[in-house]
Length: 160
Image (cartoon, rainbow, N blue to C red; front, side, top):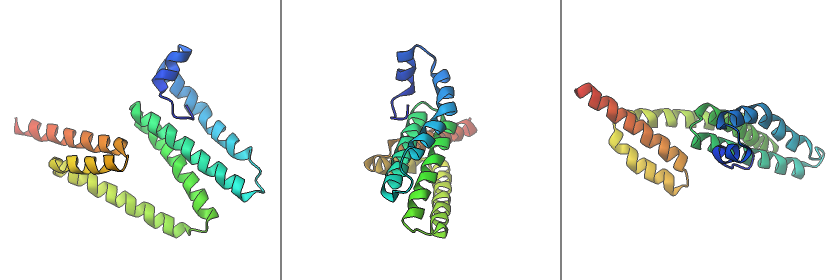
C-alpha cells in the first residue's frame, strides 16, 4: 500500500476485503511512515531531507490510491501527511511559515472559488479538467467532472 498499489488488487492477493485492508492501512501506515523517518540518521540533514521527501511521496501514493478507491476521507488524511512532509522540507530550506500559510490560504480560496464557478457554470468544467489532465492531475480532473455532473443533474432536477 505504501508503494501505491491498488487496494483492491492487494486485498485479492491476500484474500481479504478491501475494507479490511483499508482499516489495516489506517492503523499501521502512520507507524510505517514514522519508522522510515526515524530509521535515518537524524544528525545527517541530507538523509533526513531524503527521508521526508520519501515520506511525502509515500503519503501521496496513499492519497492517490485512496482517491482511486473512492475513499475521500482517507485521501484527505494522506494529503495532510503530504502537506506536513512538505512543511518539514520547507522549514529545512528556510522557507518562512507565514509564506507557506499564505500560499495554503490562497490555494484554499482558489479551490473554493473554482468549485463555486463549476457548480454555477458546469459547462466550464471540461476545459478546466482537460488542463488538469495535461498537468497529469487526472484525479482533480475527475473531481471537477463529478462536481459539474452533479450540478447539471441538480439543474435538470429543478427544471422538472
